[in-house]
Length: 376
Image (cartoon, rainbow, N blue to C red; front, side, top):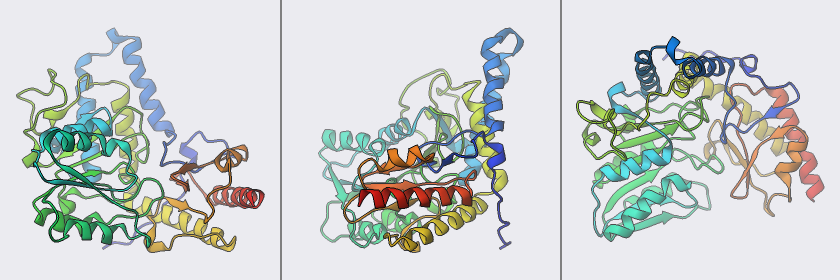
């Protein structure tokens, strides 16, 4: 295996003022200049449609489809273009046969877009939803494995999971869990919103039935656009909507494409963002972000604040939980210092990306020090 070439900071590609420390990629990312320029070029298609043949737009859809496939080790024919992750998960739920008396597995406090479709399936078909509680030791993988393989449990129908908990970046080792899920005869549906673009994702290794991710977070693209991977044996289900583009002879996962798929603005933006990610290389991005969050963790530990150990956090998200909870208004007070992070389920979630540098971390640590001391 060739060594990973260190990725330098890419801040010059972003229009982020120097005093701003934007450490909230897990919420949504700013778009880099090439992505903005792709969107502006796409706007011209609607501004002067007579000067831009509509026949050229479908090629942008296929470009984006190929870029999405490349990031997760898939074939382009296995990728559908959808409007959101909730659209993708609802599509997956419609393509998986319900199992009356079976159970649907997920973790506690899961993001709503990965819950609603399965809750509806359970209610309609006499199934149960098993919610694995947050483990005291932070080991989601062991807790989920115990749930998957628990003797005497109702048959497992669906495992609706993510590679990490969205609120604080606690990892979930899907590679370790997937064999047990398959052995149970269940479908594996993955919401990779907080993974694709920041950590390696390989559907060839993981072998999910479905996997979805949006473009507005870690792959530096626009809002209202997402991609759905459907395994070859899952490509004959009903689409969430029927339209002229996803009816026969549409091939493979194109069967699930959304209506008005040929967006001349969003698709070129998405493709440009994903191509940037691919050009840098996800392993190099992961290594850079790990170095940043490791430095942040060291700084928090120096402030005598509890930091999850390296094995209980991912490279690109660090969640800070205080024994007595965060001081009131912590996020707002950090924002006053031009430090932008999120509060999620009681955790201060810090999520740098390729535009972040050591100065951002220093500002963040200084802000947290002031906020915590002020709160005390």
